[in-house]
Length: 124
Image (cartoon, rainbow, N blue to C red; front, side, top):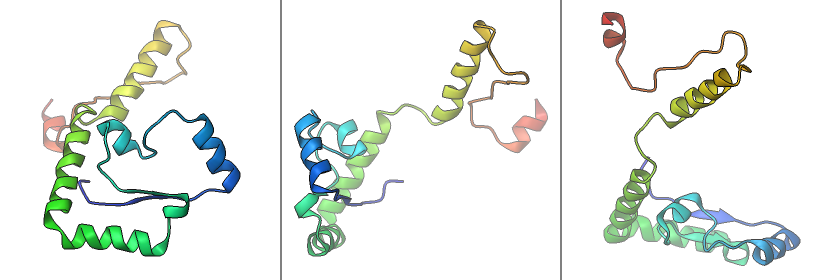
């Protein structure tokens, strides 16, 4: 939605310790993982305090350059996902695979993944 935000995660000490031990990622938020860099501030564990969250939010509200940079980065990350309609395309791919293996549920139909208006549908 191209809206600035702050990611916050606070889990139990054991969960946090296990995550740091086992995870091989540089970020925890999906948008930062997609971008391959820090776009959205991440406040994790001890950094996840009300004061720090408020400070990051205030910074994004007060600093147009930071806010605009974040919004531009979000648009860039969204662009890596491909065109709209991913869920419809995924559903169609699943139904297509099921049909090929003769395991499609009775009545399973594919969907039109292209965005159309009601008028365009009635004209076709």
